Image (cartoon, rainbow, N blue to C red; front, side, top):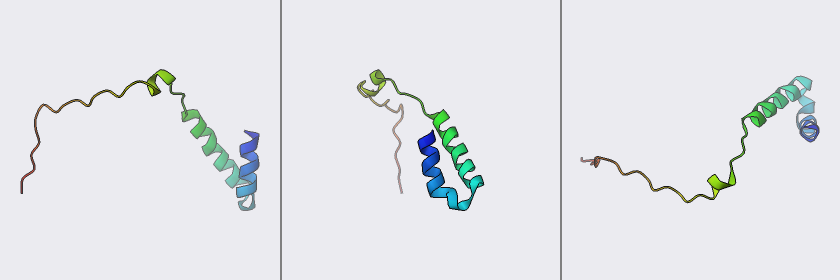
Length: 60
């Protein structure tokens, strides 16, 4: 997190400490939402798409 702070201070420091802290808050919230996807899900073959029970026809 210290690397992120360094980058944010360099980029947003001229706009004030409040802007830096608000951006860091957004970074923390974003990191909370990140989740690991297990490799078995990534490497699994794609499931075939379900077929519609009715055919949709567009007419003019």
